[in-house]
Image (cartoon, rainbow, N blue to C red; front, side):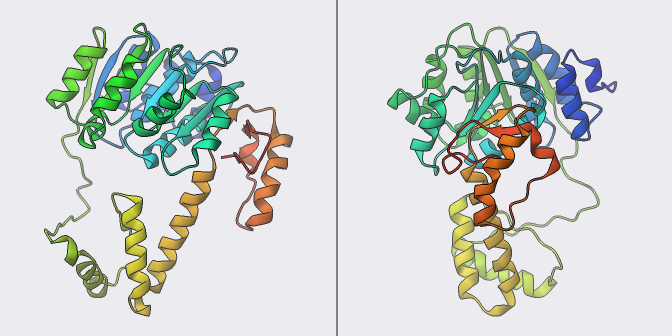
Length: 339
């Protein structure tokens, strides 16, 4: 496939500037195929693996579509997990750093819903959320979807695997029939195609499947073990290989907390691993506090002032020279600090 540069796409200079700041010049295959269709207002089904640039594929068109003068919710992105919702929100924030008047809000479980309600009342054009928390706000009537122009289902197959189909159907039915619907999924099971048939209008199908999903230079092994034996085997592997640097992934925050507790109970040889997990939890907490942000490059002074409250509580909070483009939409920095 011929290489496409972002500057060749029909997107604003503000977005191109942000993309260059992020170090990107050329699109990935999924971006090159999906972005033009989405910019044209077409429904899209995109099949691509994680790590192929899906977020920018819908994030760029969303930012182009949103009207800063309209304070109503205009774009809704549904994600299967809170971690992905935070990640997508951060990516879109970076893409929109030079745009003015656009507010986004990640909403998910595990964060006080009252804080989210306060932010929603101020007006938000883009929401990135998990189906369960979005449904919660709909039941409370704190989230109105009647003005939504675009809905994105990110990692739709994962949402179905987690049992969110009924929630997804309910959310989609509560949005205008004239909306644009974009669906991304690594696989295309029958349930995905049924949702597409019921809720999309002549969608364009974009498919990018890598022949190799792993890096050939990395050796990979897996062990089939019982749940009760996982930690013992993990510690034995650490003892055997004594890695200088290692990453341990868990599929839920609860699992991370459980693993952290087990490591604390183990001997001192795993102290460094315990510290790492503690730091990761602290990072997750800092991200969790950050919710509603306004993308506006002209509020550096306000942003700096709002950061001072966090600086009092943690010497690790720094104000990077690159943060002058994002400011909190909440005057109470204790409620909604800045990203």
